[in-house]
Length: 621
Image (cartoon, rainbow, N blue to C red):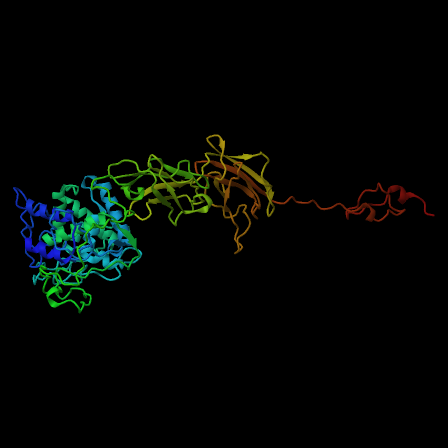
């Protein structure tokens, strides 16, 4: 075991704190009740069994997240000060400086921070630091191959470990039919955090809200890793729990040391680099395997005895070569501007969008009548995992395409921020002409948190309809009726915007449309229109115009009905046109009486007047 640590220390510089941590871990492994020391995973064997307490429930690969797959063994460039009077714990090696090793690709770093915030909100007692995720991500995939991910956080190409066929690795038969790793014979570690399919089946997460649990997505994988590390009630602020968590990920002492080294390194400060530009590691634990990455071209000047090769680690130097830089006489101070990480367990400021765990729909009933403003606003309350309100959360309210209800300015979506009580209140919603139920969807942008609010638009009602005026409604066949005014009321108040159906019927007892009565004109085909839909105006009144009498005289009824029970029956009378008597003969056209005719002479049987007696007896001239 000591030889193994010696090999690691010769391959890269490490700080005194990490050396002490590694030694403490080894010493603790010999104490009462401690875990048996794990072996290096090159042989695929481990002293930690599948049922060990260090294994989170549901873990695959015989007790580890990765199935003890290969990992990168590069160490960060740490400076080990030469303290006077203290013998160095490791050979002096060149100090590599520069920001590249501390840089983490932007999307990858954002995923680690989001995962930390999410897990701290749901399991604050775990004290998960994002730097631990960064250490594991560096060792497992070189931070997703230097941040080669798309805008959604998914790797540009799959990251797959070698087949776990028992040949130098654990033997794990296929568990996903190749769905994640493309291998239907054996499982392979998948994605930037290198989960094997059986582990992902239990711990997979959808952290970016795209509806998929994808091990190749850095957001999904980072959150899954955080939850896996916290399983079993671990408190990562306690060294023993931290070690157990890391060993549950890959059961190798060298893996534990490497992750802890990067964990401390990132804890002393890091910075963001563009996606795809992160520094790529080169050394892997399966350096004899076919899947190891290309190594840099080895320099030609050093002698073979001092040049490390894939199959021969660097020997312990006895007489350093002349080209070896001299041991620094003074410790190199880290940059004063480099941020420091708070101790594990120190509360951190988590963005509200990440703290919120649930949206609680408001309890107020959302109802309105057509073409009116809803009396209550749509609201949700943002709460964290403990049910406490979260202020400052952006909440988006979205209307379905089926409704014609609208937010101000005709908007179908609005985004508001929760107040100090965690309440996010949408602006006033106005109903359209459609009377129907619909669902408002509330969500947190960038999260998979949603809530649904039911809303209902009802028709306007009138429980009473009455005609204004009492003049008889009479028209001759084919003639026009005078304009009719009707007033609608609901609970005694005028009822504007109420839809009223008018039907011409044959009698007050019938609701069927008449075949011969008055009509509202004719349609395009020339057929009489005897049913019409009208609407009361802002004053609750409607005017009935254009009513024409039919060709058949008689008595008919105009039946008016409204939602809410309002009814009116108006009698329509159709009369025949008045008959005109024959005109009297014009007196001026009668012939003038002759002298032989007497006005008083009685009419003859032929109808003509007879000669007067005086005329018949008068002497002739």
